[in-house]
Image (cartoon, rainbow, N blue to C red):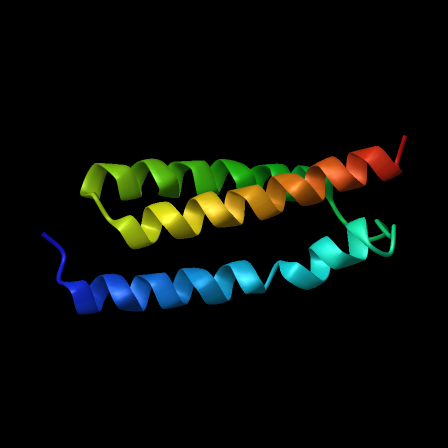
Length: 87
């Protein structure tokens, strides 16, 4: 079992990591700008997040599970927004 203070550090790190995607989400969804966004790069990041999510599930880390689900949602929203704008 992972100590609660270790999980708290993980939750904070995950929260900050997800907040880092908000400007990109805003740029795509609110401003309708998609220049400079590489969909293949974001797709690769998605694969990495899925693997980290699986790892978090295996080691039963709530912090890793929550952070990777939230980050994956952000990344997928960016990919969907960019694909929508580029049509």
